[in-house]
Amino acid sequence: MSSLKDQLCATWNQIREKSAINPFILIGAVIGVISCLLFLTELENEIVVLTGIIFPVYMSMKALDSKDEDDDKQWCTYWVVFFTFQLTELYLETFSFKILHYIPKYFLIKLVFLIWLFFPTTMGANFIYEKLLSKLFSKYEVVIDSKINEVTSAFSGKSKN
Image (cartoon, rainbow, N blue to C red):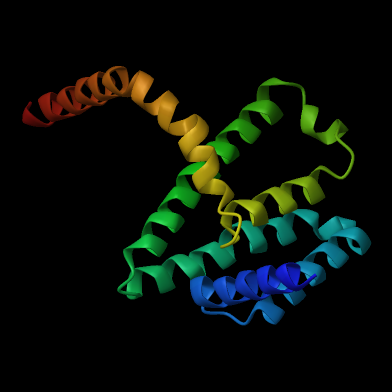
C-alpha cells in the first residue's frame, strides 16, 4: 500500500506542478461539471464548451507566459487534437444523420474524453497525436502542401490583376 500512496502523492504533485493549480480545485471542478451534466442535461453543451475550450484557453495562455516549452507543446498538441475531434464530430453530425444523438450520455463521454486529452497526468492529446495524427499528417503532408501552394498561387495571381 505504501507504493500506491507514493504513486498518488507523485501524481498529485505532478498535477500541481504542470497545471499550477491546486489539484483539489481541478478535482472539484471535474466533479462539479460531471454533477451538473448528470442533473442539468439542458446545459450539456455549455458545460462541455467550458471544459473543452475555456479552461484549455486559460492554461494555454499560462503556458505562453511560462519559460517552460514543454507546456507550450502540450497545449499546442491539445488544440490540434481538439480541432481534429471537432471536425470529426461535425462530419458525423452533418453527414451521418446525427449519429451521435443516438449514443446515450454522449456529452458525458465527450467531457471525460476532453479532460483525458488535457489532464497533465494522462496527456491523452499527446498519445492520440503520436499514435494517429502524426502518422496521417506525414502520409499526406506533401499533398496538403501542394494544395496550399496552389491556393496561395491562385490568390496571389488574382491580387496582381
